[in-house]
Length: 583
Image (cartoon, rainbow, N blue to C red; front, side):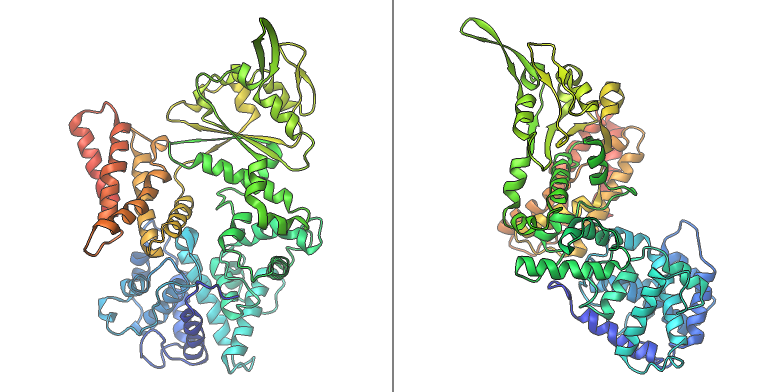
């Protein structure tokens, strides 16, 4: 399905590229005829794929050197694949996409290039797509060389037939790589085994009805893991044999159940399956299901409480969807479901064992043992089939060893009654009660945590994450109805990321002093406020970012640098300011 936010020119340009360059031999990005030949494609593969530059230099510098000895015609053919790599990305502007081609071909091409560089695309490319650029372009080169060399033998003479061949070849490289008879090119087979965004993008461009506009393999996996029950299956067995067929079946079933056309990136649908990009092989949801106790720790403002809440929501959703009858009810009433199953407790220095577990209370001049918050919660939730999650905010603000008491043993021996030190009460944790703690490591080092606590919880560091900041900024943009381009947001996030890399590398600070997402996200509110008082033209990356630096980012960095001498502190702040404001 073509997403409602997609720039439909992307599909038109893709078809035109196939017609002019692959079925014909003409350039599509300029008016040069006859250059898109098999020989020039072979030269591109030799220069870029067969002789890779593995240095740490940027893509532009490396690619220019790799093609320095080749003709302008060969260089222009290669530039098509830079264009094709960037064309579907909605978080790149048309000028940004054109700039990527000009940086390779040279400024003299500025006036030669045709109007094929579109604002927006079919979806956010994401950081992985950008970091994986050389591998993505290598795949395109090898794929289209193979396609062009087989046109005559396969009697392909029009775009629909060509797109069907591209679909067949891409699927064979993915699902039947080792045994495929579609190609004998071992380099193409090797490239096709990787989890490349362009594999998924090409399938969608060839058949938008059959293939979703989803570039990330992990997103497809998450959708199947979340919604498989609606296909009348008890588990995901067999669904990985053809993930695209499974995704299509899930979308059709969801559309039938909910009564409207479903897009997996619509906010309410995405909230049900997408916990964000996992950096590890095992997702946090899976780890949490196993351990049932987790702590998020890291710098202030890194959305630890938000992440804890989202993890709780994902766990509840995942188990709620085990019964397909629950799916419609979930989308009609998810807020109430979460409210009933997620419990928040803000810890502080005066909160103690008596409040949390049990304690003596004076009633009518006599001492009475009363259960605390946790024992009451256990009684409330133990017969529920769904998970209940207790979020303990800022666990470092209290004496955890004293607060938890017998809970340490109860965490290890679920359902076993552990006698308490007061009265005749006992504690037994039901299997459906989970715990998430949050902690600012800047206030309390992980090394100071009691070992008994450390081994009973999974500890997950939460530092700056560009994906989380992207989601927060997009949410604020919608909520405040601000017209900010995805490309400007991407540029801003890249500056924030570079700032935090500088902070992490500073011996005076380090990773624990990264600036959190919540500090950066204020920029949208600032932009909104300026719109109401500023009569001239406002640039998101100019005045709002400057104000954010002065009122939020600079003060917290000054506080982090603490007792450093005045001149050194000033120099450090000046260096960081340049990174934040100028990129």
